[in-house]
Length: 97
Image (cartoon, rainbow, N blue to C red):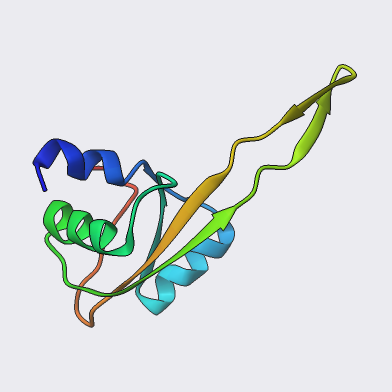
């Protein structure tokens, strides 16, 4: 994969209370495009952060329907990738790339 494509695969780290607790289990959560695959996510994390990835789990979250000033709208669908790192490797997502 080209280096430009690697930056397209990882949109942003997910910084929530639940994802912070997952960090204790050597896991990092990223928001990825809906069409991103597990091998693409693995390659992007290993190349950009120079770490060894043990596993990648993905989940798709359907957007909710919401009302704003009486008008019906819909939040976008998102996909998250939970990346489990090999023992001895870690990523500090607060510092950025």
